[in-house]
Image (cartoon, rainbow, N blue to C red; front, side, top):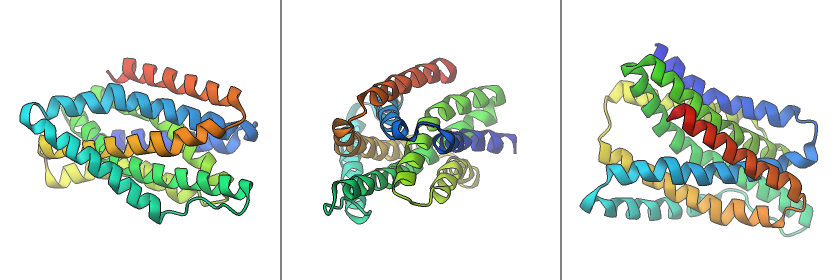
Length: 242
C-alpha cells in the first residue's frame, strides 16, 4: 500500500504545476515561461534519463528495436496530431490559441505513456526499498511540475477544461504501479521498446510542436527564464533521483 502511495505522490506533482499556472500573477509571461521550461525538461529527460536507459536495456543486436520503435513513436504522435484539434488560420490570435490547445493535448497523451512506465519503476523500487522509492518519486515529481504548468497554461489560454487532463496525468503514474502489481514483472526488452515509443513521441514534440512555438514567442525574457528554470530543475532531479 505504501509503495502505491509513493507512486501516486510522483503523479501529484502535476497538480502542483497546475496550481502554479492557475495562481500565477503574470498571466502574460506564464505561456512563454512554461513552454520554455517544458522544452528544456523534455530535452534533458531524453538525453540523461530515457535514452541511456534504453541503450543499456537494448544492447547488441537488440538495438535495432530501439530505432524501429522510435519511428513508431514519431508516426503514432503524428497520427494523433492529425486527429487532435490543430491550427486555425482564420485569425492569428485564434490560430495561436488552437496551437496552444493542440500542444497541451498531445503533450498529455505522450506523457501518459511515459508516466505509466515511470510508475512501474517507482513501484518496483519502493517494494525493494521504501526510502529509495520515495527519493525517486520526488525526483520524478520535480520534472512533472513544469509539464503541469505548461499543459494547464496552454489549455487555459484555449479556454479548455484543465481538471480532467491533470487528473488523468496524476493517476497515470499510479496506473503503471497497478499494472505491475496485477501482472507482475514486465519483460525488460518489452519495457525498453515501450520507452523507445516515448522517445519518438518526445522527439516529435520537441521538433514539430514546442520549437516552432518558441521561435514565434515575442516575450523572449520569459522564454529564456523558462528554459533556464527547466535545466535547473532537471539538474536537481538528477542529484535527488540519481
